[in-house]
Image (cartoon, rainbow, N blue to C red; front, side, top):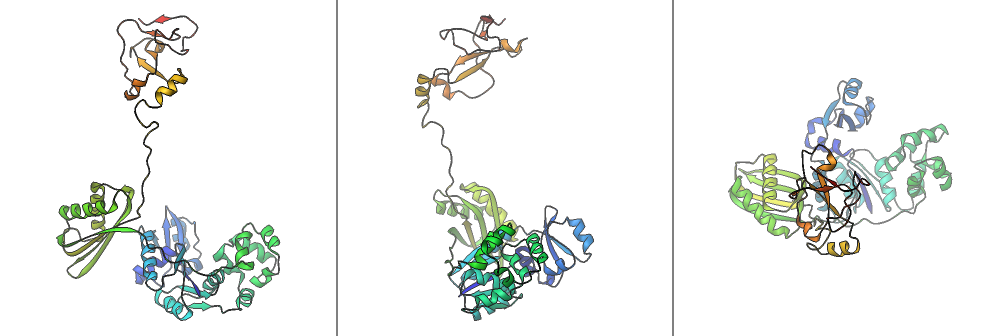
Length: 407
């Protein structure tokens, strides 16, 4: 059987789980001054996604507005690992939506324990629709050969969970449609032509439906341990050295620490802005993770440091394999391909008198790209200087006026 669990809206569910006192209150989550997620009670008060924070407060005086949790992504991965202990078949479809390989009794225990909506069916698409039709803390099952009857009785607004927009729902309601069974009387071409999002709904209405759930892919990670230590520079250096050795040329994106001190458990993590490879980078990330855990400076009984999000960063070694290789062949075939500009007089009265062009040579590949060039002693030809023997130059700003000599 396929079970679809909805931990949605994900940031609202996460905050309610971490702060049980928020349950039952109108809760909304904002990011960059806009509401991005809210609970059903806040929606009944008139709050909507996309509203400004001040407008939402004016709409509902009792609204609880909280910022988007910074650890939402890591908490989602931790929840997937928790679900993996129940079943090896765990397939996330996005933050807050996951497919599981569970029977109906197991799904009911999951729904009651986590306070989420769960749908169970033989098909993935039907299980998702059953989850949207279930109540919070309950699991709804659709038996074999009952899929058609279930779809015909399904209220039309529940298709919003699988792609139907609010505008599309209003268009269907203008035609008097209230149940999915009434929409099933249409042909797939009619639905796709009438609704811009119609093609997304066709697999749920007409199939083909799919069976099975993918096995959970455990994230590869590198870990290091320490016992009877104090959270300080020495411990950070030791753990960073162990993690750097375990990476073996790879880079990490996340660093997580789990510590036990005085019988209490502390956890902290740090998401790096760049790849973590060197010991210094790992040491700094570990220190930041310890600061977030609250165990900095405490005598620790055991410490576990984990580096995850492993990948092999790529970099551009250079245009040519070595100095001068390839450049000599390019210059031999195209002598005027590259030119250098040498500054002769920074205080020249005319800009054209302050520089001169030089033909690029292979040895110039090692020269720094600076504004200050080595000026030659004596007069410096500039502008349209003819002849490659004298230095060679393309047509400059004074081309056509003959050779000029800077004072």
